[in-house]
Length: 325
Image 1 (cartoon, rainbow, N blue to C red):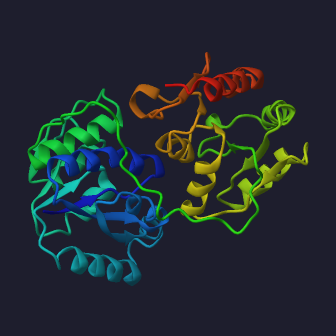
Image 2 (image 1 turned 120 degrees about the vertical axis):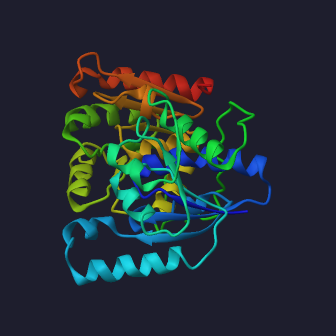
């Protein structure tokens, strides 16, 4: 059975879909998936062994070139690719306007959420088969239920299983320290970012216990921020931008992670790394990290400054000692 999935972005959202593929593969052993995904995150789907190929889009360019010939050519090329194969089912697992635009390009009937369930109301018009999915459930459960309804099977296991392999992870061209923690300092919203001075205090705590801190970056601005944080210690390293496969390799070798509320926090959860993730305004019951060894620290007043470094370190230290659960 060959299935086409449409789920374009973002990093955390893509990881939320992986357990649904694991469910389906247990119910339908001969199943395989093609996945339409934004090129920025195209490494993620291939972590799941049931994903055969990815079809890349570039939605950032789509936004900037909405009336350009370049955009029209890309859309026509994607349309040809999508309609060059016969799929047993097509499922829009993102259910917003971006993914609905791709759904409209496909000749096959598309499964998606109904008007009460979609993330953006107009998206439901793109779907021939519409499914009712609880909006107050976690995103992972919503994805699992949508795929189960679309392919007509029952979810037999409540246990969460991302189902990935590490075969595509790539060792970066740098010498990793022996004992290190992965510190995700960056976030897409200023309201989700912990102060630099708090990260610096945290580094002192972890250095005292013999750990080196590794700080990732996805842009020049984030790299400069990482360098500023790391300036307080020679046992802290600011990393330049790496591929997702390289970053996944580093996280997988880490002793633990401390994360802002961003995509890499979900990667730490996917890998079951002992991780503390800090939240200010996010509804964790809907889109918080899920996996083994995960701890959420939620600000009491929606301000990141209210989460103190000593508390964060103590929570991670406890996770690493006990295994978290």
